[in-house]
Length: 424
Ligand SMILES: Nc1nc2c(c(=O)[nH]1)N[C@H]1C(S)=C(S)[C@@H](COP(=O)(O)OP(=O)(O)OC[C@H]3O[C@@H](n4cnc5c(N)ncnc54)[C@H](O)[C@@H]3O)O[C@H]1N2
Ligand code: MOO
Image (cartoon, rainbow, N blue to C red; front, side, top):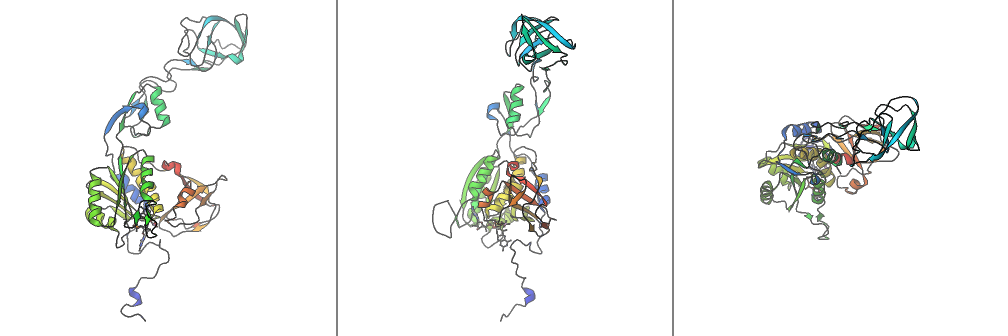
């Protein structure tokens, strides 16, 4: 028999460790994202680097074409260049000596009734406005014959038809990937102004955390978050800085954050965010780190600390690796983008039929490890436990269930966010 406490003093036992405790303000995911978006801005400087070293970097200034693409009208095919009369029926043209090739123009001019051999990419010689494809002609006795009419400017490319000189081709904030590199190169850019790379520090916390493989003691946990988060930061084009691991000691953590603040532009910590006896990260950030938000209506990942430490943004990610991963993708990725000079990026998502059924509590947003199958339906990982790291590599994306979704049946549309849309 219990004495001292009446049953009304004891909270009812909740089997669901994901139930949102009453009396706490749970910030909706969108509100947390809006806050981040509204408060963050670029923290890195600008440098000019050669285009061939710029892949993955963020453009710092709008770029204009330094030359038109193409710079001159040229042939789109191998064939014969001529002045097109547009007449229907059998046409005959005398073929001139010489030819026009890419990089080796034909210097003469082509009169009416004459044609010149021309290769793909060659500048159109004077007098040529159209090209007849070599497959469409009969060549006989120094002349070509073909069945007209030819369309006006057939098989030619107009000067500047892609972009004109001086036209804005890329905007500041765009990430330079293969397509952007191509247009910059084609229009003559040699050096490109980009933002300096953001330095992202990753710190693991927790007495139980040890280097992978370093011990066989069962109470030790191999550090999975730090390599995972370093890999994410690098995949997103930032400089990933390994800040190591600290034990559950507030002074040591404080010193580590101080050191980090002078070394990196943004810090990821993992673990110690939930408010347990040894959860120092949340407590320390609340006390000294201008903590902004730390309980978010999300599963997994609700204990997320967003703070500033000596002016440096700190993402206090949850310890459970799946929760740390999801929070990094959902909150940290677009934030790091803005800090590094890019636009706030909303991940690619589309609705696909569910290959599973599930009930869900209202009021929080849930992210499930998901795999889009070849039949176009999406499966969810069998377990939702946020320590089940194997589900991350099983998955090829996340399913995002909104706050008001409570029941998902097989075939119901669900939102699928492919990992590729998160840059991984
Ligand atoms: N009474 C409550 N307990 C917990 C709550 C709660 O609301 N009330 N929230 C749970 C949820 S949800 C999560 S997520 C975790 C997050 O807690 P912390 O951020 O404080 O993380 P820890 O307690 O330090 O660790 C949780 C778990 O993750 C393991 N871990 C930590 N760091 C790493 C690492 N670098 N690599 C691999 N695994 C790591 C750690 O050993 C723990 O097993 O709190 C719940 N509890
Ligand atoms: O939601 Mo916690 O964030 O389970 O992993």
